[in-house]
Length: 256
Image (cartoon, rainbow, N blue to C red; front, side, top):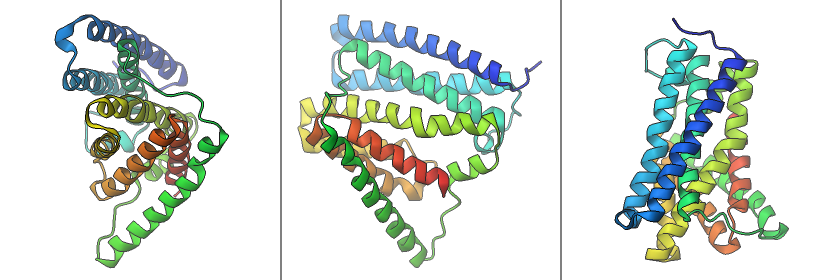
C-alpha cells in the first residue's frame, strides 16, 4: 500500500534522504582521503559522480513508489505530482551526497568572497546568455526545427499548490547552487590542476551539457552557460557569479 502525497511525508522523505546523503558521502570522502588507490582524478570523478547519480535515482524511484506514483516511466517525472516531488528531492539528496564526498575528500573549492563587482557580473552575463538563447531558438526555427515545449515550464503549469513550491525552490535555490558547486567548485579545480585552466573550463562545460540531455536541442546553449560560468569562476576565484547567472537563467526558463 502506498501513502498519499502530503507535505509532511515529503519533508520526512527529504530529511531521511539528506541523512543518507551525508552518511554515504562522508564515508566515501574519508575513503578518498585515506586510500591511495582511490587518488587518481578519474577514480574520484567516477566515485563521487556515481554516488550522486546512483543515490539520486534510487531515492527518486523509492520516493515515487512511496508517494503512490503510477509505474509508468514515460515522462511521468514531469506530469504527476508524486514523480515530480520524488525526482526533485531525490536529485537534491543525490547531489548533496556528491558534494559531501568531495568536501570531505578536500577537493571541493567554492572560492572566497570575490567582491560585489564580480558577483554582480553574473547579471549582464545572464542577459547575454538569454540573448544567445533567443538567437539559438530563432536559428532552429529558421531551419524548420520546432523545439518541444520547455519541460520545466510545462511541469510547473501542470502543478499547483505546495508541489509547485517544491519545484520552484529546487529550480531557483537548490539546483543552481549544487550545480555550481559540483561543476565549477569541484570538477573545474580538479581538472585545472591536471590540464590547465582553459581545458578545465571547456571540459566541465561539456560535462554540464552532457548531463542535461532531456532536451538534446538545448545542449549547445547549456554548454555555453557552462563556459560562461566556468570563465567567471576562473576570473573571480568564486562560484558566486556563476550561481547568480544560473539563478536568473533558471528563473527565466521557469517563466517562459
